[in-house]
Length: 79
Image 1 (cartoon, helix red, strand yellow):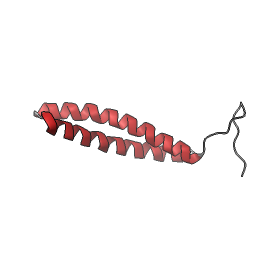
Image 2 (cartoon, one colour):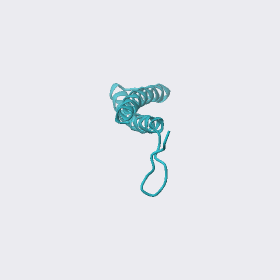
Image 3 (cartoon, one colour):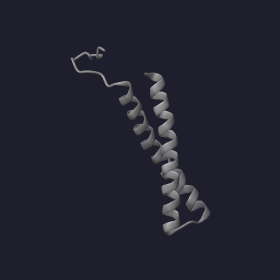
């Protein structure tokens, strides 16, 4: 199987590497959005302390995983 070669002689990343990169980028963006939305929603209902941190962590992981999955799927379709 031949490798795709870029304009300067380096090989292009594989489709699996594109999917991994899409998941990591989507996860990072989703986690940032989860921190913002989780913080505002928890502070609005009056949470403080460890309860606040636990809820922000949960929101951050859920939104990061969800958006990362969608970005990985999109990058896979793009390949």
